[in-house]
Image (cartoon, rainbow over all chains, first blue to last red; front, side, top):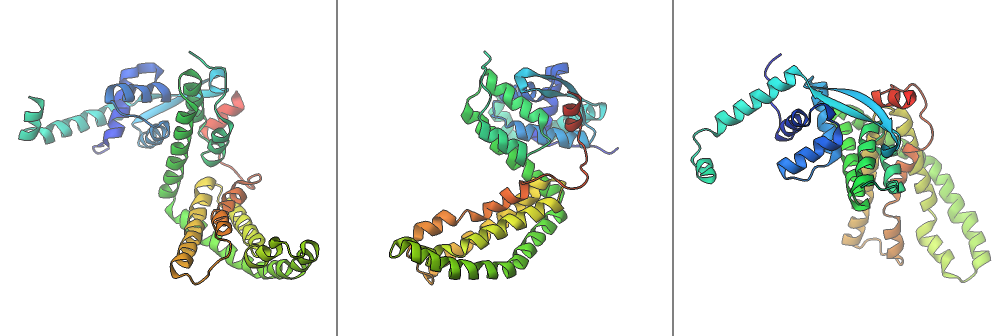
Length: 110
Length: 211
């Protein structure tokens, strides 16, 4: 499989799943992005991106047990696959390489 | 803190019908609403989820969406032949009876100028939506809404043109405004009734059956 690059939102979602760990379903993933990314998140957009990532084989999902708190609906837990981890690394590498040597960025972070 | 109340019924209904097979998302939204979020937050999330679902459905099935729109307009065109007969009844026999019953009341005048053709138009939207819904099982809500959007745009364009050119001065402008969203009946028709034919079960459907 060739290199897979990610949009910024997809990258954030994969990183959020890796941070949350085994309890990664929609709510904690969205919360992680909201807290660390400091941006409001729409759960519908999170699921749309997760579906895309699953089709590309970058995440896998399994269905948990339904609970009363969720109106009898089950949680869908997500895991980043090995190609998903590689895609995160490649995207980060590309972003780092692109931002290297840009004076404006250096001044801002100084 | 966990609230005992369920989320508002209307957005739940909209989510179930306009963005079906999103059981996990619906569960997440309900969980968050019970824990800490407001009804306003729930509404926002549901409307956004529906918009995302519809957009993704259309973008991933562009040709099917075109087929749905063409089918819908074809049914509307075919229905116009039946509509002629309905209109004849509405502006003839029924109008005569209204005049007999109401005499000089303004309603028969409003019927004669503004309302007589609306039932046929409404029925046409309902039927065309239903046909599109039944012929497009995959992403039914997305396909029905794609067709409804074109009909709504066409209606709004027609109304705006009439206002700008002033070629159809109406004695009841509020009635026109009231009936502007009439193409939304396509959505009612499109999502109404059981789905005929085979359905591809999703992972979430299987979870529902197991639970």
